[in-house]
Length: 289
Ligand code: CTP
Image 1 (tube, rainbow, N blue to C red):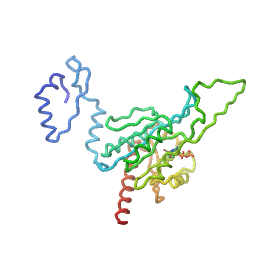
Image 2: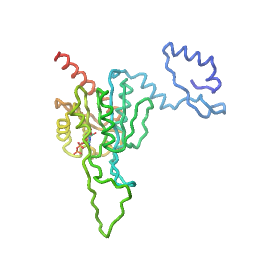
Image 3: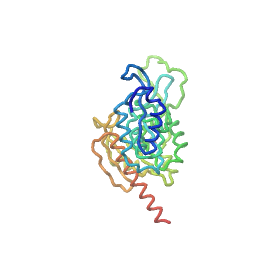
Image 4: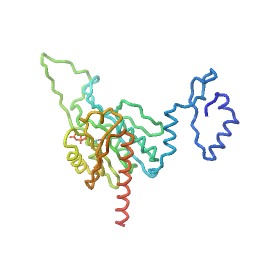
């Protein structure tokens, strides 16, 4: 409802809203700002995009209410010195879309994000902000135990500087070259693969060649249930784009080509595959007992 602030805050209106809520009606709080009558305050019609999001939330079937999902997103950033860093082109959009859709479908979601370039679109999700790969590793290890599903979309930097430079590195001598010594970062998903137990673990494979073979090898090596492969060299998809085109590969080797779609649509297709994997795991467990 949108109306003047005084009318909105009147006891009678609030009591009637409560009655309607009890009867099962959904309400959106009005937004604050300039009002039609020339005053300012709470009572504005919320942004149309927000109303649409809320409607999508209400009309989406809640098929993941029993699941706790941990999502990682964005790039990581490794410092060279106080002013320079090593990072990559990940925007965080794919991971944010996965977290948003999992929440929309009723899951309990925690998002661990590196320094992404976009704002997270919902405020009803637990968000853990990290910068470096080591921080992301620690956050994942702290949160994975309560999750039944872990989806690692993050583009983790594979290396960090071997030496910590607390001061800005200065140019030395006349050489046109300099060497940075790098040290391998922990393979977070690889570590998870070793302690996964009954969890479903989904990895992403960013490739520029031999997409299917490289992705299948990663799935096996890291003990994953599903790997989502995308060709990051292809124009119009991947890094920074709102769209993506992926291949979803299951542990059985079955691969599904997903055509060019929005990252939110892709996220839902990935979550459908997760649901299938959860069902299979449950069935195997029941057969075992
Ligand atoms: N990943 C991870 N920790 C790392 C590197 C990657 O957890 N240090 C995860 C990513 O989040 C992704 C998957 O592993 O889900 C594959 O990432 P990718 O960068 O494609 O593969 P790498 O294992 O880094 O192999 P390479 O860079 O040699 O292709």
